[in-house]
Structures are given as C-alpha cells and as structure tokens.
Image (spheres, helix red, strand yellow):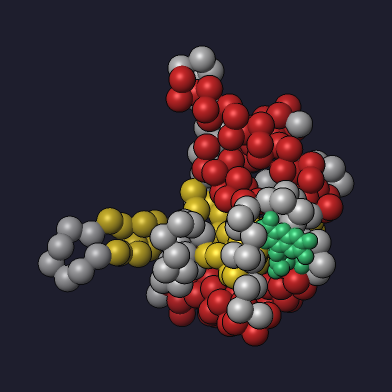
Length: 240
Ligand SMILES: Cc1cc2nc3c(=O)[nH]c(=O)nc-3n(C[C@H](O)[C@H](O)[C@H](O)COP(=O)(O)O)c2cc1C
C-alpha cells in the first residue's frame, strides 16, 4: 500500500513521494576514521541510539507517514568497510571522520583516504576533460561529522577530502538545520576541538540531534535496487 507524502507550503505546488507501508529492514552504515577514539566513540553512540531515535514509531512521527521501517545499523572504521566489509555500501551512510598528522587520516582511515585522494584526482581530470565522469555513487546519501582542531593549518583536511571524494562520485551530502554548522568553509558539520572537548562535544551532540529527522526522511524513500548497490561496490573495489 502506498500513500502520498507532500512537501511544500499550502497552495504552492507540492511534490508527492510515494511511501510504501510494507514492513522492511533498512541497513545503515555508520563509519568512522578516528585516531584517539573521539570519533569512534561518537559513531558507536550513534549506532547504539539510532534504533531508538529512529524506531518504527518515531520514523512515522517524524515523516508523518505509516512507513514500517526497522533500521539495522552496522558500525565500523572506514578501512574495515573497504577490507572486511568488502565495500558493501548502503544507500544511507553516516560518517564521523577526524584529521590527524598534517591533514592526514587516522590509522584506521588511511586506505579510505588513499581511495578518496584518487577520486578527487579523477574529478580534476574530469574537469579538464581527460577522464569521463563516473558518478557510480549517485543515489547514495551521506551525513558527515568532521572532527578537527583549527589550531592546525590543515584544519578539517581529512573530512574535506572525504566529502569532496564522495560528492565527486555522485553521492549527496545530507544537510539539515545544524548539520552543516554555520561555518562557511565547510559544507558538512565541523566540530572544532580548539576551545576544548566540551565545546566540540556540544557541536557533535547538536548535529546528532538534528540528524534523526534527516535519517527518517531518507529511509522512507524507495530503496535502491540491489544491482545499483552491487555496481557501487564493484566500482569502489576497482578504485582501490
Ligand atoms: C597529533 C595530532 C594531529 C592532528 N592533526 C590535525 C589536523 O591536521 N587537522 C585538524 O583539523 N585536526 C587535527 N588534529 C585534531 C583532531 O582531529 C581532533 O582532536 C579530533 O577531535 C580527534 O578525534 P579522534 O580522536 O576521533 O581522532 C590533530 C590532533 C593530534 C593529536
């Protein structure tokens, strides 16, 4: 059974999204790149909270639909995603990524960073016309929480490369009120450690609170075809 979900103001033309009420599971990846555990701890907290914050009933309330969706989270480092998890994307991915060294990736995110650097290089060649554009991650939606410290000249470099790489392959950043902090340099939420962990965690917690409605509104959409997810996986593996 389907019914319409409408967006837009009264009297303005509205887009109608068909929402199925068939019960189904929705796998969601929660990935982190974290050196000292700040981002990893937050990602694990998200994984522990998501099934309650986006329970069947809360998704219905948040989306004003009768969708019957059970979220099934899986939390791991971005490098484990590439190796152990064999690049099996879900259409919604939540990332918590810090910077380490001189704008580099944490130890558990170095392979993923190499992949992202390659994708950013591809995008430059595409702009110069020497490579065809391959947007094999279209349909993938991601939320990104960047951790860093503006004390460093390479502030937020790793989350920035992660963002640019995913977008260059066609993925879409989920942005809601508060998910991109009012920090014009970054399209994603940048949680700065420079004023101490309390200030940084305030931003992280605010981002998290505002994440749940975004998650709910993604998971009620028609899932991607299995073949599309397989293509994302194969093309990512090919890029490694
Ligand atoms: C040795 C070291 C190098 C760092 N390098 C950067 C950097 O280049 N850019 C940045 O924005 N933050 C940098 N940071 C700050 C961390 O990204 C920040 O403290 C973050 O909250 C750490 O999260 P994590 O524990 O999940 O790795 C660095 C921190 C340390 C200790």
